[in-house]
Picture 1 (spheres, rainbow, N blue to C red):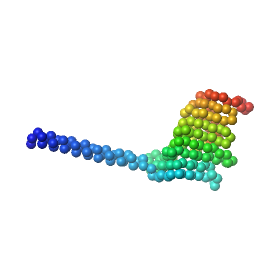
Picture 2 (cartoon, one colour):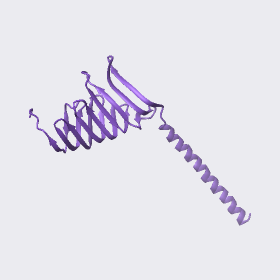
Picture 3 (cartoon, one colour):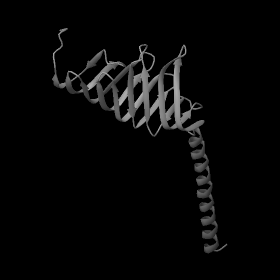
Length: 183
């Protein structure tokens, strides 16, 4: 066997090794990809939550992806959400964000991008990320925020509050707020 034939056989062997590795790599990629393929998908999603026949919230989103079969199941709203929360007296709180994900085993919703929450009484909070604990009906973030209510405007970093804004605990705040007569 000549040197040219030997090099040709060696080149064919090396090329086939790389081709088989590439095929295995693509198979592995497909396995990982299928793990995060949604098991459910909905466009123009509109869901009403009820408790004893009373509507407690309405969630509207242009796109919902459900990953119920993932190891840690979650539902994603890649094009944002609009939520209306109702209390027992019919008072409303509104929530809007550019993106949201809810983790099924935790009852926590992660709201991201231009997050705004407000109510009819004039309270409004704006931030880049906000978490909502559905079980306790409690919002919280460690991000910077702007909070506006009839008493004034404040800015800060880190806040938690009830869904009706009746209890607000903020950290590192600045701004103008009127002192309440309750203090």
